[in-house]
Image (cartoon, rainbow, N blue to C red; front, top):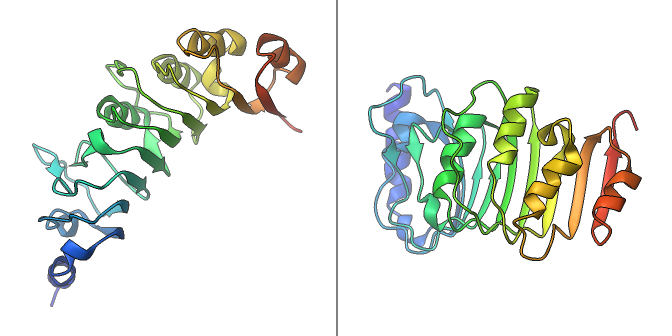
Length: 225
């Protein structure tokens, strides 16, 4: 029996219990993942990664579409939203190991209920369209793997986060004028600016941030410190 047949039998056995799933983790080849279907009325949390997916189908495979309670998703290994799509519009918590910039934009564009998000951006594949709707994010953590300052800055500047309360971000996302970049985000915050701000790899001192955002709880990690 070849590997694909083994994976297929494994998925079929799991699907017999799909109506009881509450917290699931999948790390399967694409051909195995695309077999997952059916009603999952209790599923709330999903960790998913895609292994051995080299070919992009014409239309992304829509998975977990019948999981009305699903709201917490963790993406790890190789996840590509142009290959597999999840019910993004109902997700409120998203944790991502790594995504290319264009992939992150694609997911955020559809994640209109997102409240808490942790993203590690792998620069190198910029988006051709950075239009992202206003998101109800309360907390956002942004880190990067490969540095491409213009790409990271363009991604950050595309975000519109009117109720953001907690922001943790690598200063590379903020570009040459980090105070200006944060002020742009703050300009759309209903309460002035995020109440908790954490900056990684900072070249700008804490005193400068404190003067610009006097009411925020600041945690500034200087480069080389």
